[in-house]
Length: 229
Ligand SMILES: N[C@@H](CCC(=O)N[C@@H](CS)C(=O)NCC(=O)O)C(=O)O
Image 1 (cartoon, rainbow, N blue to C red):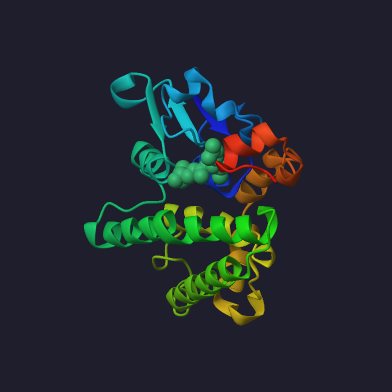
Image 2: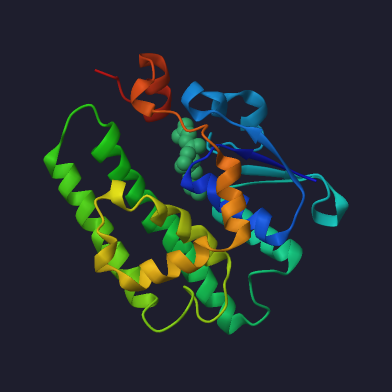
């Protein structure tokens, strides 16, 4: 049994998708990031960056309890554990590493900034919105090209790289993206959202999402590190 420390955000969805796809039994422990639960000492003891997702695998490495934080590391761990959605050949592994790192270092963080400055920042800062929306459009263009002559991000096989990237493309409209300009991403996304495991992962997410604009001043300060005007 794997304990999944989770809140329904794109980074959380990556892991529910992987666990559902891999058929691994898991139990969800909600970490309400709008209430500061990511700062609880018990959570910080295995997720020191105060962010979810994180997992505790009770039957982990050598049968011992193993904890993992950072969604990319969790995806790699789960794929190594099961031998699924990865590759045994280094020439394919290297593709998966690169696209996973691209998601972790560029696609996710930049889209996070788009969400913040488009929807949460109490002040409308045109410069920040323009910078991050333009960067989002550039990154969608990179993904579009990658998907132009193959079914999945790293080739003909569905891998953890697709699982990492897909959840960030779900809210494309909130990111100022017109998916009509990205037909290959659109086709890839539609195919993946037809998968039962992915549908189940989003059913689990339910309606727990909080409207972050409603946070109190204290909660806002904790989550965003800034004073709420
Ligand atoms: N690089 C991390 C990012 C995780 C992350 O940003 N989690 C956010 C929610 S999507 C979080 O827990 N935020 C709480 C906080 O920053 O205090 C990963 O991929 O696991």
